[in-house]
Image (tube, rainbow, N blue to C red; front, side):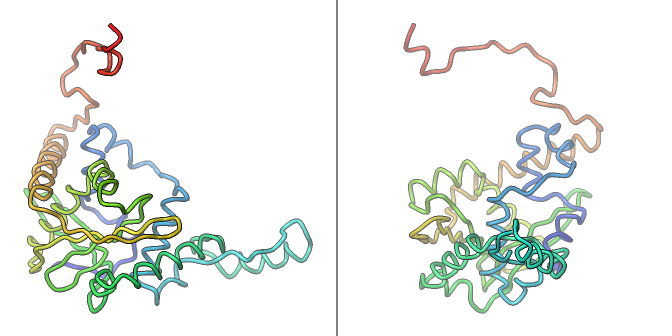
Length: 262
């Protein structure tokens, strides 16, 4: 298998079509090609990254993240404390003590779940996987690989089955599951099942474990192929169009809820 030990930043900088790229192409090729501009990290993204690192690679957490001291930076003493912290945390992502408390509680909740804890023990975390299709380099970065399972850790507002099912579809987790299994197979790995561990971002930090169903993988595979086909076509033509491949006039209709007023 072409799997490489990389930092998350090195993986994202490496050439290759990822699931995130497919999501942008799915919106429109124009969204994909313009997304190459620098994007700032949101607080939710920072929390998710820190949570992943603490749960999946705890031994490396302090190399990438630093917890800011609780001090009054308006005072001379507080300024000195924070200046020393800044000098010692150069190049690291900074989180607050409150954020650290949150991700620690999330970690404890995940490891207290007997199935989740077993899935995240004895495997390999954060392996960067690369493969080629039709001359195009593709990539994925599984959170955790164990036996025949590809395991993905999701931080979420609600891990409740009916709620998580909706968010999973909206965030195209079906495409992720199919894309990762496809890449792992192409790279020679004997991985056949995709698991999600969903942990809530607020108390009580409930946890649920999900296995990607057959219909989920079927639809995900179809959408991934369609998005990849669009990418290949745009790469060949050099035309990265928006919502319309060919300019058109759309009839503007009332939304369904408004038609009831007619």
